[in-house]
Length: 229
Image (tube, rainbow, N blue to C red):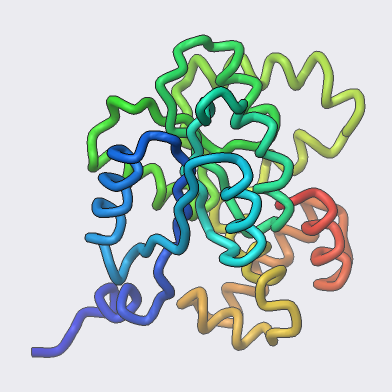
C-alpha cells in the first residue's frame, strides 16, 4: 500500500534533537525514556544534571530544543540561558516546578520559548517540544500579556525592530532558521527540505524581506544571526 505525502514527509524529515537539563535523576530518566520512545520523530542527544554538564554538552551536540529546569540543585537555570542560546537554531523550553510568575517571566524575557510545569502530561511535554521546535511560543495568555507589556515599557525603546520581528509567522521563522542552518543551500534545496515549491519559497522570502526591510538572503542571514531568530 502506498504511503500518503504526509507520512513520506515525516519519514524524510530529521528528528527533533532534544537535550534535557534537570537535577532530579528519576525525572531525567523518565523524560529521556518518553522522548526516546518517539523515535524517529524525536531523539535525546544529551542529558545534564547541572550547569557545568549542560555547558559541556551544548557545545558538542547542538540540540534543536533544550528542556531546562530552573533549579539545578541550587544553581539558577536562568544564568544558563545566554550560553544555551548562543546557537540561533536552539530553542529553550523551561520545565520547572517554579510557581513565582516573576521568575518565569524573566525566563521568557531572557529568550526561553515556553514554560512547562512539572505536572504537565506526557502528551503536553511532547507537544510543547514539537511546537517550540517549529518556532512557536508555548505560553499561556497571561504570561504573554505580562511579558509583552514589559517589552513595551523597555525593549521597544532600545530595539525598535522588536514589533517587526514579532510579526514573522511560524513558517517564516522556520524558513529563516533553515537559511541559517543551510548557509549556502540554494532556494531549490531549501524548498525541497521544506516540502514546498520554489515559487512558494520565493513568496515567503519576499514577505520576510519586506517585513525586515532587507534586500537579499545574505542580509537576512546576517540579520538572523545577530538577532537570534
